[in-house]
Structures are given as structure tokens and as C-alpha cells.
Image 1 (cartoon, rainbow, N blue to C red):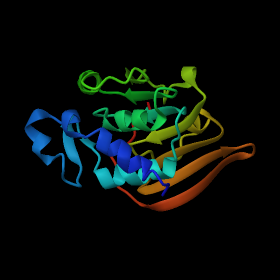
Image 2: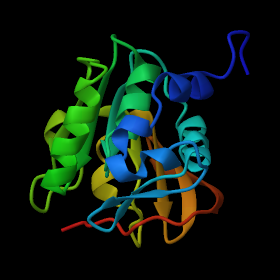
Image 3: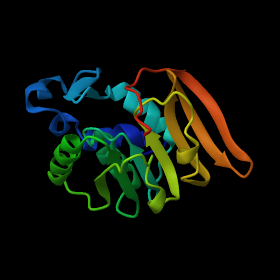
Length: 191
């Protein structure tokens, strides 16, 4: 922890998840539990998001891709971490969730944060790569090389693969992976 405190905790406090939840479930915002947002997706529990963001080690000025941005909450928190010198692009497959997250983000505008509609069978945003950091909030059955390829050299991705949280660093000789315990996520749609 730095002298100024925990940047992840501060970013999460600056971006409460209440406005990112369906109206009828906003009373659950303070619970450390996943909350359903429709379309068989959830807004992840805060302790899981915090653990992932600490592993991701986002810094001011970073370019970050948020895959499976769902409600847009993690994109907003990432935007707080990168600040106006950075950029966050959330990618979501469900059009209704894209619209809802854009409305929630507009309530506290950060022009450097946006949520885009995922494109067909394209994973991530290769046309905007490379990224310093990639956060994936859905679980593939294997580490997707397509996302590793979207990292800069030295870039980091945090992704749950078959129930285990991985921290992947792209090096000159490929990806180096460390394992960080069991987690449960909705499946990543890769095609």
C-alpha cells in the first residue's frame, strides 16, 4: 500500500456500483455478492473485482481493454485508475447491456472511458491494440491467444480460465502465467 492509500479501494469508492445495477436490485449494491444484470450475466462481487484489479496493476495513463464489461462498472473503476491521460475500452456482446452501461457511465462522465458493442466473432479489439492491460470478466476454457496478442510487450492480462484466476504477462518469448486461486465466472463467448 502506498502513502496515499490503496488505489483500487479509492477507485471503487469513487465509482459506486449502484447506478450500474438494474433499478430493482440497487439495494443490493453494498453486498459483497454478484448481482444479476439480465441476459444470464452478473455484476461481479466487489471483493472479486478488487482482487482482479490488484493483480492487473493498472497505472495512470494506461490503455486498458475490459472484455465482458457487462454493466460497465468495471470500466468505470478502470477509468478512475487510468485517469484522463489513459483510455478504457469496454467490450460487451449484449446490445441491451451496452446501452445500459453507456447510460450509467454518462451519469459521471469520464470521456476517456467508453463501452463498445463486440463485433461478431472477434475477441477483444484487435484494431485498437496494443493495450497495456486487459481485464476479462468471463471464463474461457483455454487462454485465448487472440487476447494475449493484443497486449504490448510487458503488458498484463487478468483472466479466469476454467475456474482459476490467471495473471498473464506478455514477454518477448511468449506469455508467462501465474495462478491466483479458484473463481467462478460466466462463460466467455468466443465466436
